[in-house]
Amino acid sequence: MSERETWATRAGFILAAVGSAVGLGNIWQFPFKTAQFGGSSFLLVYLVAVLGIGLPAILAEFVIGRKAKLNTIDAFEELGYRNWRIVGVLGLATGFWILSYYSVVGGWVLRYIAGSVTGAYFADPAAYFGQISMGVDALALHAVFMALVIGIVALGIEDGIEKATKLMVPSIIVILIALAVWAFTLPGASEGYTYFLSPNFGALAANFGEIVPFAVGQAFFSLSLGMGAMITYASYIDGDESLFGDSLTIVVLNTFVGVLAGLVVLPLLFAQGIDPNTSGAGAVFVSVATAFAELPAGNALGFFFFVVVLIAALSSAISLLEVVVSWAVDNTSYSRPVIATGLGGVIFALGIPSAWDTAWLTWFDTLAYQLLLPTSVLGILIFVGWVYGRPALAELLKGSTANEGLGLTWLWTARTVVIAGVLGTLLLGFQTLFVDGAIVPPF
Ligand code: PHE
Picture 1 (cartoon, rainbow, N blue to C red):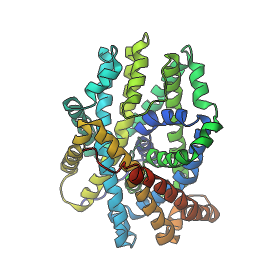
Picture 2 (tube, rainbow, N blue to C red):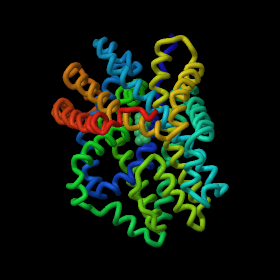
Picture 3 (cartoon, helix red, strand yellow):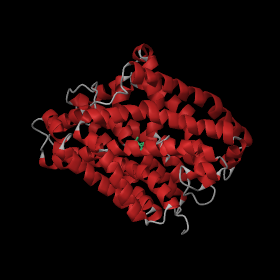
Picture 4 (cartoon, rainbow, N blue to C red):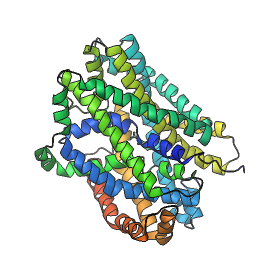
């Protein structure tokens, strides 16, 4: 077997991980959920979830990946625990599952970029979404999006993913900042800021049981945890760098982009008198498109907005495909391009129902959020905290100036608070799945 690939630079690894984290979750979900769940009081809960649960969990994945330097399944065997490969299998399956519909949404975004230029959605944004989100149209664009993802992953770690994300992540931040500045100039923008950022403890208290698991789930999804993505990316680290430092950078940048997206979207909606309190897979597209349709420079603004969403979605999707590709590269003698195309094709096929009918997309998403993700993260935490234990601590401290005390704090936090938090989230998800019946596929 040829030598395993690595990142060329430390910044390359960090940017790739940020690219994975920053995605549809930040721009498509986060601003709306924050607004809906009580603004800055939700933000507070989310920050606690990200720092208290997400950060220890991302460290756990990094430790496994960097120590084993193998794909998310074989890593467990490499560390001496063959049976725990089942956790890797679950993560890989979750990644497969999520990419199948993530790519369908990526296809919608492609369509909206074109639609902004031509003004196709301006006349009737709701009807437009209905037309392009299902059936042959959606299927075709799902294929185009998947082809882009395959193309980047086929080029490999350094020449594909690293080069691409080095360009993509700064572009996302620059364009979003420019859009946020523009949004600031809109009449009515301040109403949007108030809605987004002013605390509403009443709303928080009233929905606490729903908000906390959502905040935790969002922290996992947004940080790309529980899908083998961070294990895989860390497996390409060459040498030892401070995992604490890297994780903190990634977590902070990821949260920053979410807030930035809110500072674009909410003033925009309020300026046009559109209610952000909508739900459903397409609501965000429809409401944002409605705002662009009514603005003087709507074509250009819509174009840049959807380009940002596309870049963010692409840099996340490549990390999902890389999880499976990495496994096949480590275990077969096929070339990377052949593997990427083959597995990408299978994922495309799995996404066909979601492209055909958004009811399927919602079903795939609910199962991922409520069941697959938390179960997979739980497996990783139990493994790192209670099974692997001390060697994990040693690996974490390698290349770091942090002292043993900080490491122990991490280990015990992961073992107790974090596991409890994930378990709670999982149990609350069971309510949705089994009592409300969300587990039943929409045949
Ligand atoms: N973190 C990405 C987002 O917020 C989604 C994602 C999950 C990407 C898992 C890769 C792996 O959109």
